[in-house]
Image (cartoon, rainbow, N blue to C red):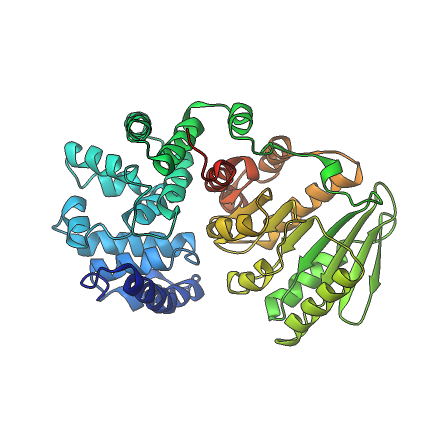
Length: 427
């Protein structure tokens, strides 16, 4: 139906239904992540390549890495004998930018492109970065997908062709006085050709490698953090582990009826407010009670942290506002929520994961972050990430950590910030 009825309003309705339908398959594959492939992927074994494709692109927010890879492999098998060119043509290249971006993120782009002739491959990638100002997808989704893919494309010849095409598109938009198109391609071209410092200077966006300490303090010199916990079994366990990590001689913990306040004793002043994750739905009531307390006492956290599964994330996102300067989202697939965060706090620096949010990664990141704040240091993300990468240097933890994205590598967020700074300005 979505293929046949090609109007914008109807497509939005079908999008909602397809997201709902895809979630059934995705949640089953994710829940069976410890099972063998025959059991885990039984739910999609009889689906066509087209159906699996739609499960991938509409379930992308929640797909585990292994769920994506299993789905991708089955889609490729069911696609035969069609080439990638023929397959995408059969679905009108619907959501193809999202699909290619996911392939780039999971290192399967070369596998998909290998089914095509070189001429078709180059043409597809030119189309990937063309017409981004006039897509049937929601505004800027295509351009953000392209920006997000940059860090994952390792083929130097392919990247060279992409840079040349983006430059050509920028020049064409300038000739035709296409302001929106020029702004999109000017930013994308700059992202590929300028250093981080030159990029932020050119577009007037705050530095992406540093969060100054003094931007996180309130008028009294206190840094306030708000941490969201949820009342499922995992959430309650994470809460106990998190609060148990703070104690004398550096911290004191004070328990109220619906929340806990953790305050620093040594070093700089930090107050961390955490709702108590009562059984659902009382956990949400505790969050709202804490929010009401903070609001009524004019306490404005500059740091917000989500500790919970991805399906709880919308509840945390509702609380983000312009006071928040650092947003740490440890949920599975939280990387997909950049636009939502930036629409509520346009200068926020975001830490997120493309795939599995893991306590064994979230905990050390938050500890390293707080250690720097206790010492009164600016958050140097490049330095901090380099030290963390040594800590997670091998095995499962390296794979998990590699899926986490620090602010300076948040290419989609950088694109959106730059675009919003430009607004409706001309050349």
